[in-house]
Length: 256
Image (cartoon, rainbow, N blue to C red; front, side, top):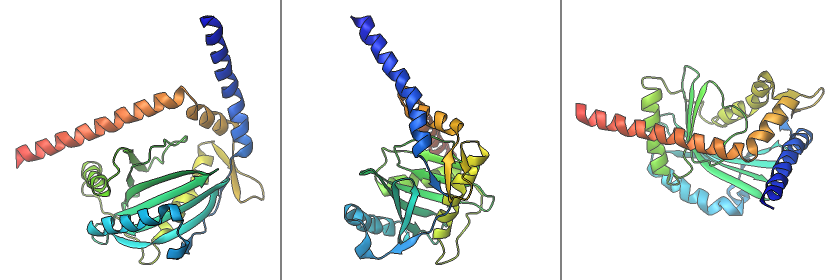
């Protein structure tokens, strides 16, 4: 009886792993262009209006200025994306509240980011969803989903800068054109994954589609048990990062 149940479960898992890449290959697309539209306050989605107003006050207390809320359109197939952008004039740090809606499911997270003149970018966010493709090699991305309080997350972001980019010059953006940083990142997503062999630009199309390599790797990374193992390994890595910051803090106090 137990053997029959186990065999059935393994067979079902195998079928899902065979079917998922085909489904993803046929449905996935990502826009080659990003055309942001500044939203008036009355156009903000009702589900984030209160949170955005509260966040504006919280980030204002940290020295951030609200730059606006932008509709980025349908970057991914059947996925609407909106970003609220903030900047810190003294540190050239940016903060963004990203809202993605797909099939009535929403992902909303806060991110602090700093780009340096060397081309390196450091991001600290509380997103609990791991990407199914590699992060950019020019950037360092740290995800701490348990950190919901903006002040604590920003403090952690500054500590990570001190550890990984001490002495580097943070790059500012032209006043009034700060959204260009987001546009650039979105429009590099397709070409970057095309270089990795995950995507390709369709002839005469403004969309990138998955290659079979990309479809298989992305589908399998998102399925159990691989997804569970990836989450566990990543959490261990972030905990190690936090421990290293604590040790740096203790060392600094000892030297003071």
